[in-house]
Every structure is written in structure tokens, then in C-alpha cells.
Length: 282
Image 1 (cartoon, rainbow, N blue to C red):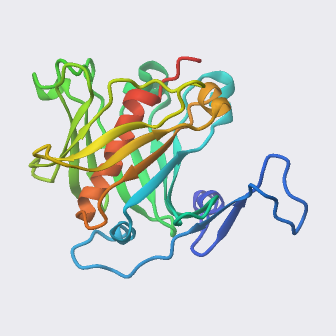
Image 2 (tube, rainbow, N blue to C red; image 1 turned 30 degrees about the vertical axis):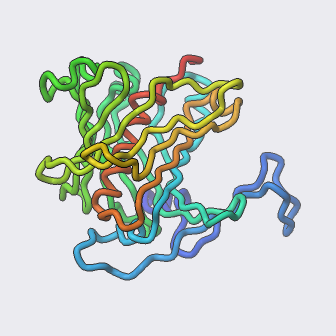
């Protein structure tokens, strides 16, 4: 086993491990304190015919929690570092108890992060409990793109994300759509045929006096019904004001095609970078 693999095992944990994250002060040895957060890997399900390997977890779920990890170097210097996320499933109504489903980390160039900020290109590698990459989210660099007024003019003006599982095998795409004000997205299959739509809100403000979730509604493609949502959740005043670490939730029907669920996870990362990666307090 090489040094890089050992480092990954230390960071991400192995199958069956239970990782306990204590409060800042730390608990006394052998004693758990109130407010302690317990995270464990979700038990791997059996293989499913037609489901990409490693995505079997998603067939059992109707929601995911995506928590970005705080990067202290970025918080103190303002220099963007590679983002990392824990992807979890809430266990019913149990407080501070989660099943960890995946771990995601960004691959991007330092120069691109410094010069282009949230407009940068990246690959998001999503790993399972065996440190195997099961989903890859690819965002190409698109100069002068992202304006909602111009997104329908040509493909170059619309931000896009490609989702692959296994890596190299596309399972879907997310494409920004033109609009007068609100953010609109199309969820597309491998042939770029439309499956679903996402409607963004008018306001993206979260502050001490406005701590409600910012919801991006998941709609059927004929726009007749809302079937889920992607939500930017309030993380607390300290985390919101002094770091770039964000918390998200995503809800979808449990019987939704598993490839569409994976594509929605890619849509979450596109929304994160478009609207919430750049903080105004830097």
C-alpha cells in the first residue's frame, strides 16, 4: 500500500468504521458528551442489475445531506483550497446521527482557483466506503458564461456539468437554462434528452435575520409538479460569515431512476459553485 492510499484511509475511514467527531474541547476518555456527532458508513447494499457499481446506496434513499468541510487555511488566508464534502443520509428523526454514504473531493489547479474563483473548472471525485471512485462530476471551464439572460443563446453561454458512473461512462448532464431572473436548470440523460427541471429562488440571501433554507425546487419536466428540492441550509453565523463551508440538503422520490439521482448530485455541486462558493466577507 503506497503513502497516498494510507493517507486516504486515514482521512476517509474504512468500511464499518465509526468516526466520532467531538466538540472542540474534546470529551474525557471513554465518555461521550451531549452534542457529540456520531457518523458511520452506511452498510453496502447488494449489486442491482442496471445500476452503476457503487450507486446501489442511492436506490434506498430519498434524501442526502452534503456538508462541506471547513478548510482553516482558506478561512485565514482567503486563498481557495480544494473543496471536500461528506455526503450523508439522515437516520430518521435521530438528532446528530448520520449514515455516511460518500466522500467527495475536488480536483482543480491552484492557478485556476486563484484567478477564476467559483468559475473554475474542476472534477469532483465521489468515493464510497472502500475509497473507490464511483461517481465523477466534471465541470469544464467556460469563459464569460453563467449569465441567465444569455444561457439560451448558445451552448457556450450556459454552464454545464457532466456526471459519470463509473468514471468515464456518462449517466447524465445538467445544463443552465435562460431566464429573466431566477436560476433554471435542465436535468438531462446521456443523450441530452430532458428528464427534470430545477427552479431557483429570487433571493439568495442568508443572514442572522434570515436563516431560512434557500430552496431550488425540483420539478417534473412539464413543470406540473414539484417532486423534490435542493436546499442551501443555514450553517450558523460563525461558519457562514468566516468560512466557505456550506451545508446542503437534497430531496427526491425514492423510486426515481438511480442515474437521475446521481445527476441531481452533480446539479447540487453546480449550484454550490455558482451561488455559494464566493463569500462577500473575504
